[in-house]
Length: 217
Length: 414
Image 1 (tube, rainbow over the protein chains, first blue to last red):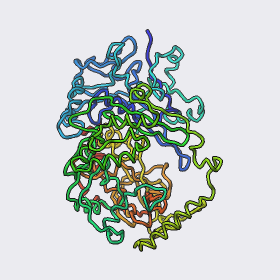
Image 2 (spheres, one colour):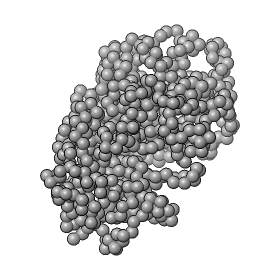
Image 3 (cartoon, each protein chain N blue to C red):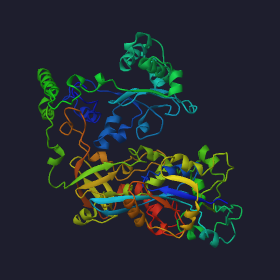
Image 4 (cartoon, each protein chain N blue to C red):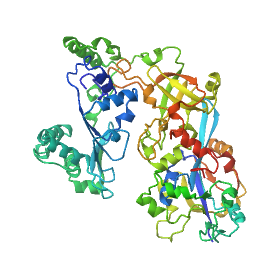
């Protein structure tokens, strides 16, 4: 069975956060909850200084740490490698949020639903419709390919937004799967960008756990 | 426009004229204001308090906009308008190498009882009793006088769609259905329409027009005894590319840094912060939640990240919290546009320690005599404070929100 991987062309990512906004919009996420984030780090000393951006979301890790710590079995991995959360089984313990190496698990606080996006306590029609699949007090991650093929999937928006830009969903090729142990720190990514300026660098998100300690946002 | 030969209307001088009507030969006091898709209370430079006085002096303010802003809060009447997805438009693309008309058509049904700007202003013109003159002015402004059959007729109100249709017809004789199919009519510019083609396509090195315009304007100002003719920046009218010291460099030495503002791709001029999704990412970005200094500059000034400071320019002051970044020039202080919204009842929008524009000059001396463009940089000095001033303590400011985000397990932190 084909397994899916997320590929980012970091040479082309300018940290615009359009994918973050698109994800929040498509999933109707409350304030402070993100299924996609763009991490950034400044490097160098003035005047030779730059900033590197790395869009980050659920990487559907093999041997997913969030699945291992889930006490209720709510988190599970499908045969095609997609990590899912069954909201009916989730008890909201937050273990997955602690275990996720990419800080990509979100706990829905009850007040986030109550206050609304504008913080007035009044939900817009958009929020009322969009919040229904989310459950206060439960753990969530990006909902991936939950809609049947042929429909516009929720996760499809990040590709639509960045078409020709940074994000591409592609089935992993065998040689890519073989590189799974290869993880990179942000600085290594920056160095790689210097090394491959013309063709750009495809940063393959792996099962490694280096994102969290460098996350700026 | 009569004063600035290659410029546009310099709105920052409205305040200067309002404060000094005699000097500028204004013999009446305006008491009505109609504002269209603009947020001067937030966008203009000069002290907010003076702008508030300006607005308070108005007997009636009508504002047409599609979102609530600092300025709509001053309105006696708000005229809600369509947004770009709800309205028709036809606009000229930017020359010089290509030119043509691009069409925009509605993608969604308009919400509620909003109207297009064209409909709003036609309606206003009719109610005021000036619709005929309004249409005549529009005929000149939109170029319909070139084809009499396209001219707006007296006594008739036109929609945005009809105006767009006529602009398309004016350009290439094609009706709206042609534009709906093609989207735009863009062609390369004919060579004879390029800049100064009679000079063999070359840019002038000695721009004699500048001297002629200067002398002409000088003579007219002298004849009319314009009160400010002696402080006009005549030296700005240079026929040759000539470096001139910007007045900002001549401020007192105690102002030892250059203050400048900046925006970001998701932030534009700060107005998008009324969108809670954008606010949610902007206030997590270190460069948008502090007054930025180079680390070496901060050290030299005895400052460190998170220090509370007061920033003074010769024209105004703001408060803020220091952040450091190697990306910042050592002689500058950076203020993100995210920190320059005014306190109000707009959902989600937070005020910070004052508006960067309060620091900027808004006088003739700092206005380019040729283009009318205002100075957008100022000299500043920084003073460290032991704590926030009273009005910023627990006042629901940007900084309170940032602190809340930073608390583990609290509020919007996830």
